[in-house]
Image (cartoon, rainbow, N blue to C red; front, side, top):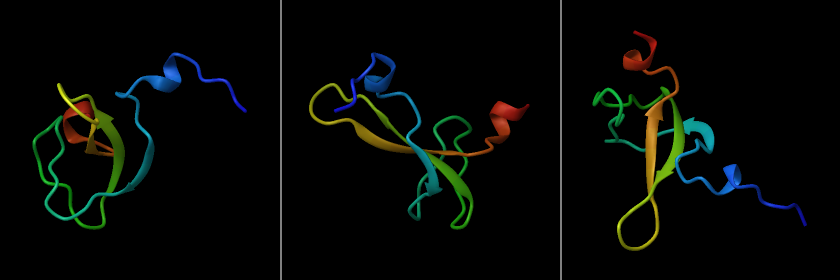
Length: 65
């Protein structure tokens, strides 16, 4: 069994690159993520309950500027 590090439990870390479901917007630049555009899947902590799944542009225009 692999030991978990503190970084391994950080919900803000990206999980993997994939494609976002239709209708998602990048929380960084607020632009829609196109159907075949690569996106980074991650999670965001919620005040109550399980973390929410988030998708960001793999190459976000706001971050690159």
